[in-house]
Image 1 (cartoon, rainbow, N blue to C red):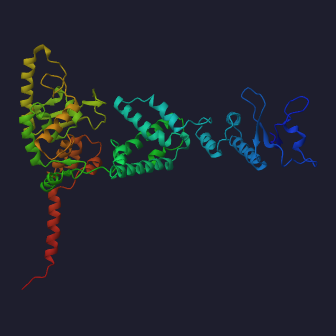
Image 2: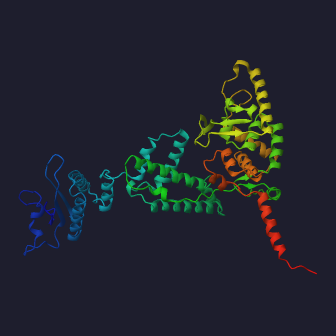
Image 3: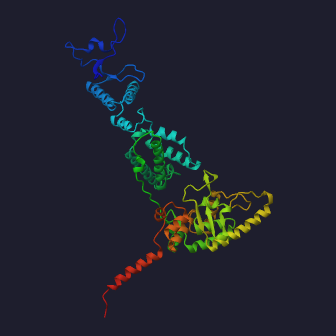
Length: 486
């Protein structure tokens, strides 16, 4: 194959025919036949491998400002063709790609980029951008509606604005780290604006919340899944850069409402942390209050405080899975919310399907509730709906998870209890169990965690008694070395 040539051409036209001179313009040459310094622009030409149907073709680019630039691009084109020496099919594909780039006025693709695609036997055509791929990816997801809504939000708010213009196969860990750094800077700007003395500045971020640690984890997880799908479908080859980026979990540790913290809250109105849990004494007082003032929800809250099921799992507990005579129940169903719409579904993870052993007090509370529910059903007659659920409203309809939360908040606020979220009843159950000496693996299975690592990272795995014993042991050791006085 010829090595190609470099020459000059211009836009002048023949005075007689009106046709372009091209590279025949007399002004392009000096008297010594060398190319003119002042007139025309540089171009190159290269014989390409024949098309798939055997037609000859040439690669030609003009309009380059220097000879050096024309020579560099010609060498670039040769290097790309050299990647597939001995592979006719791939050389033809590279030639097709070169022609496409030149005709569209785009730069030639990077040699390393094409080399990587050749190694993975992937397509050589221009790669879609991250934004284009994510937009298409969202339309083919096979996940539940709530997860799909979450992925769409993370993609629209975070991934596309920060990464959308990057070709998918050129996405690197550095791009992803830069995104998270930008998110953190935005967080700092939001917090500074909220603390500003200028009311207009505070108003500019009214209702705007910083992107928390859990959301950052979900951003990474969404991108990791999308790229894994691209790898599985051979849209790209190589490794997943999102899997190599570490995002600090920064998971808040539950803080117990000790008496001193309660008094401080009463004096200042400040809550010590984002996740607060009640002591066992406070839970007893709350449940006694709930039994009197919210009897229709008291049994559900009792179960959550004692055994720690999630809100959706409690609302979706099936009547057929509650075996009070055996002091056990099975969690294999939940009511989740998609926006505000309640949806009945299976637990999301394998660990979420689990058996719970029940204590005698909880069995007594649930048995009394089942008897009361039978009275409701008898009074409703044929109007009673057959939901198959254990916990229902007095008219037999399912509890909406958001409604259960609203009732809980209202009761806590009206009764003046130290504030916690409904989900923190689950945290209280876990913290009290660990403090009672229950093995962390048992607590992890009770909560439906996939690993004990999550349980250990979230809760105080060292009990209060162990901490006190450690303090006493240190003091005893020091006292042993104290000089005896006469």
